[in-house]
Image 1 (spheres, helix red, strand yellow):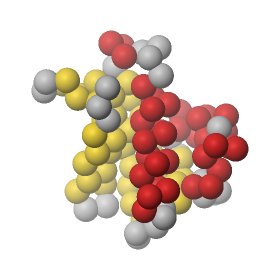
Image 2 (cartoon, one colour; image 1 turned 90 degrees about the vertical axis):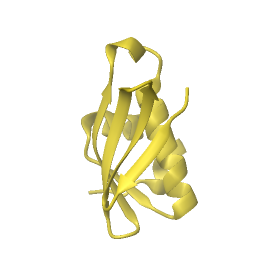
Image 3 (cartoon, rainbow, N blue to C red; image 1 turned 120 degrees about the vertical axis):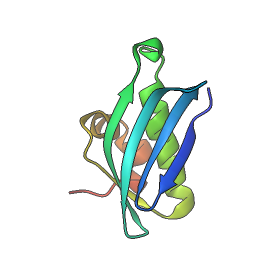
Amino acid sequence: MLIQQKQEGSKGSFYVQEGNDTLAEMTYSMTGTDLMIIDHTEVSDVLRGKNVGYQLVHTAVEYARANHIKILPLCPFAKSVFDRKKDEFGDVLRAN
């Protein structure tokens, strides 16, 4: 499964697309150059149970590490992933 990224200005997303259909998407806003605020995650029923939401968060974490960015997960799903994976993702987490 290919997770893609797009960003226009301060708004962006990581997403999975099949044909013209977006099957999963996690949206974010950038505050300056060093803070990504994850605000929404949505996965279609077609992909439910396939760990796609976690993969979106993981891809954002890898992007943040590569670009020296901290993440503030305001989206309840992304926050729950960060809460469960504190040891693994804590290096990019920015507390409220």
